[in-house]
Length: 227
Image (cartoon, rainbow, N blue to C red; front, side, top):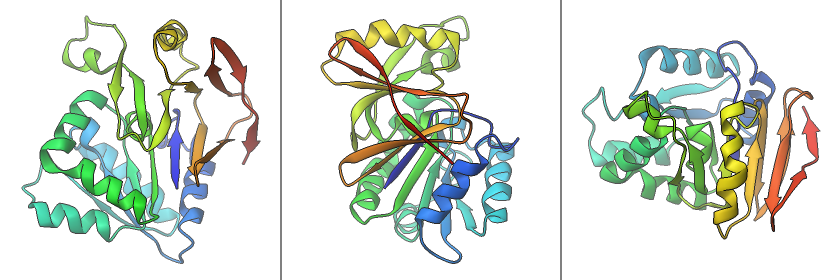
């Protein structure tokens, strides 16, 4: 199962209901959650926030740090294979995907999906599960570059996704998706796509936010399940 969150602040509790849903999907009393903060280059504050939130929800939380720690391939594989839930953080999607390939994290995450683990994440951590995602990765390298690009994900969800669709600058997705052959899904803050058994549904923690399907040149408001 994949739970891809469109946006919202985990630290302030905006995604709390979705976080609770993620934990419930593991169907374990004390699930092991692995946080992967590659997109933020292992930002310490982000790691502490995720550990605090998910520990409060009953998880045993670990982090896979590829920038700030020296870690072997076997250790990476073991961390991923022994987790019940994997949560990927936000940040620079393009750099994250390139780093994952270097350390074979992409391969191990696909294996985790096949093993039935709960895969989740927000922003870059949502994009990574899709075929492609609408990304501001170029801004991280050069703040003067506000161009959005499509970044290739792992391809587990057969759509092109746009997170943070409630933000005005994300409206470029409407035109960019027209050049693509795949359908698109746009997720606003505190909404999440749940992909399971080749089907999806949309959940949300706040009824003021929405999600949309872009199909055959049309923008369709999707039904959301309020948590």
